[in-house]
Amino acid sequence: MSPLVQTASVRVLVRGGGDLASGVAWRLYQSGFRVVITEIPEPLAVRRKVAFCEAVYDGQSMVEGVKALLVKGPEQVAEVWDQGFIPVLVDPDALCRRAIQPEVIVDAILAKKNLGTSAKDAPLVLALGPGFEAGEDAHFVVETQRGHNLGRIIASGSAAPNTGVPGAVQGITSDRVLRAPASGPWQNTLDIGDRVKKGDLIGTIRGEALHASIDGVLRGLIHPGVTVSKGLKMGDIDPRGIREFCFTISEKALAIAGGVLEGILRVYSRS
Image (tube, rainbow, N blue to C red; front, side, top):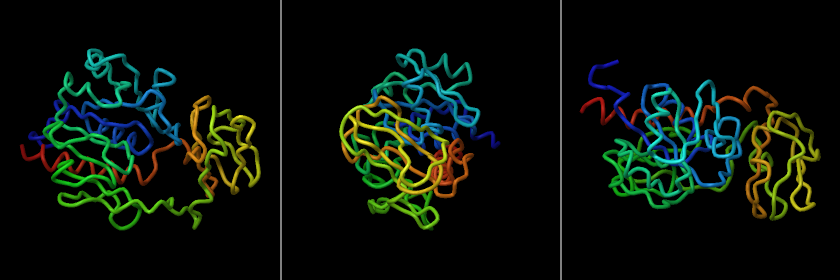
């Protein structure tokens, strides 16, 4: 490592703890950065087995050998860093940044719009996907749409607009996504990693059944007991049927994480 890049002295606040955000946090942690994650009180991540936001429900979460711990406030963050873990805070507006004073903020909420991030929030601000203008809302935007530009750094302009169509897996797009058949608390019958056939019962919401839409393996499923609204994305089925993919970070998340890492090094390797 170049002596100009002392990653352990660079604090990175990642807004969001879903699977793509967690891929970013995981790669930055592995590169030596001090990473902290902020989340909402009831995260809605689908790919929970590779999402650090599960620490909000369970107190801790493990993603490919890296552990995250839920903390009550920013005063506990340094202690968790010293233990070698990633701290997670319930802090939807990332107000903890005032106490932590990160050198870098990564908006990885992936809301398809800016929920309040400003380029003034930290010396370096990166944002993932559409809804941000590089040079205004953030210093860099990282492309999240599958294809030739996935993971590319955008220094001027914005990412490709949201198409509303999930990325194809073996040619299957919308049919692999599971959506809530009703509003109410979610109760699952099956879990992530289970193999399914089209029509299998996956769970219920107020007596309304959610059935598998295709054959494959349940790669993602929202946390049990969470109250959802009708039509919300509840899970996804991987038609490739490879169970191990349910428990490892996706190629998309790693590509985006590589773009974030590049963006940080563009600044801090020259400072």
